[in-house]
Image 1 (cartoon, each protein chain N blue to C red):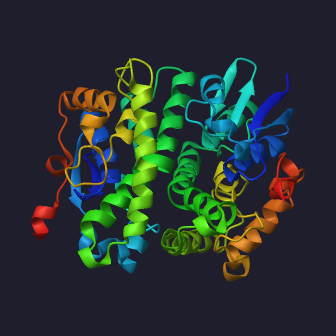
Image 2 (cartoon, helix red, strand yellow):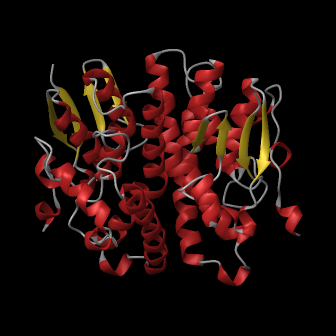
Length: 212
Length: 212
């Protein structure tokens, strides 16, 4: 049975789930969510797909899951990959997934939205400036951690990598300059060389070009 | 061996770990972190306690863990409590812990800090107003979910509850009015009636009163 992922190209959180599916070797296909057309805010989407009004949503037979970290956890159980090789690694993966949700992807996703997807006259500049400062600190933590390491946890690709990279391949500006963070830069290149890897707008349906 | 939790009263993230320890029945004690004196930003703290510069940090013999969600996960493994009773419940717990890190506690913690612990003339009003709007949406999601339920996942207390409540017992203003969210209000009361429950400033050392 083919796993279906309700997602859209602009969503870094959806990308985390899509990339985990793609690299896991499981059979999957994306289903486009029309986020910018308001689909996630409709009563129908909330009633039948996700009460939190968020994408991505993964459907595998009777199993319906939301939150990219939960979907990644399910993919790890099903494929035996990316979950860490010991109890210690598993907890270290969870630590970075939580940190990413708290400090990195949450802030990057919101800031990228405010800077690129809101009309220019509606962009809250003080909020954007504040967030950019928080993001620089988060990039610094990740960059320092990656010094001398190929992967965030242990010696292989895990959900920690697949979570933290969620927004970092997008071309729109949100205060992330790869050249300023050389260890992040090398790690993103390494990850992009995994067999099957694709950039967000190539892996999922929908992109800003559709609305241009 | 007594588990040590490096924490401070003002931190809702530390409270999540402290409350899980307290209600688990495990033997534990708090160790005060002088966050407002700058302790988490010192090279010594980053080198010996936590490179992310964050509290809480749990130390149990040779095991040193950070991130409240990871500490809760460890407490569940050790005590057999709060982790959910099936694979499905376990994933649903993780979903709410991640949602809390992304949408609720991260925003509540930051907003409470900006509104209460920064000097009045340094509070970024546009950021605060923006965050308060995001928080109202998050409170609404949680309140709707708790309608007709005693606990967030299944029919017992789990880490989902112990995560989402992290900031909601604090007295300082951050846009949370219990009376406006009756299902959250009833759930917080229910949780506070668990044997051993204490409010944040009673459970952990340090409070705004120390600096008054």
